[in-house]
Amino acid sequence: MYLKAMIQNIKKEINQFLEEIEKNVNDENEKKYIKEKVNKLTRVFLDEMDKIIEYEETKIDKIEEKQKEMEEQIEKMQKVIENIEKDIYIEDEYDFDIICPYCDYEFSIEYNEEEKETECPQCHNIIELDWSGDIEEQEAGCSGNCTQCGGCVENDEEDNEEDEE
Image (cartoon, rainbow, N blue to C red):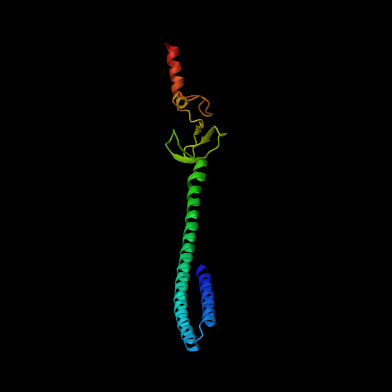
């Protein structure tokens, strides 16, 4: 666009130059000679400018084509990233891996803070769930609230040993 405007300005200047020659040169042969040379020079200049414009337009077209390709690649990458985010953040937030303390069977359950126990799909024993993440509480042993056992065997044995002494 800029080059086309520049060419229009040059054409305007050349026409003003030719008008000045018409007014100020009295000899018709000299006037004719100057006009021919100016016209020839103008044609050469305009031809070269057309080549430059065509070259620049070709470069712009290539840049726009590359930009379109890059936008398509970015769109594909964005879809991949969205799928990765779903895999990492959404699915993993709701799944919780458990290893059954009775049969060592590994399975997953959906995270639900309200659930306090779950059944092992392999051995069907009830497993107490502790969502607090408090390691000290877990190391302290069974709380005795499991529906199946009512307390750990270890705790019962310790109580019996204390009673015997």
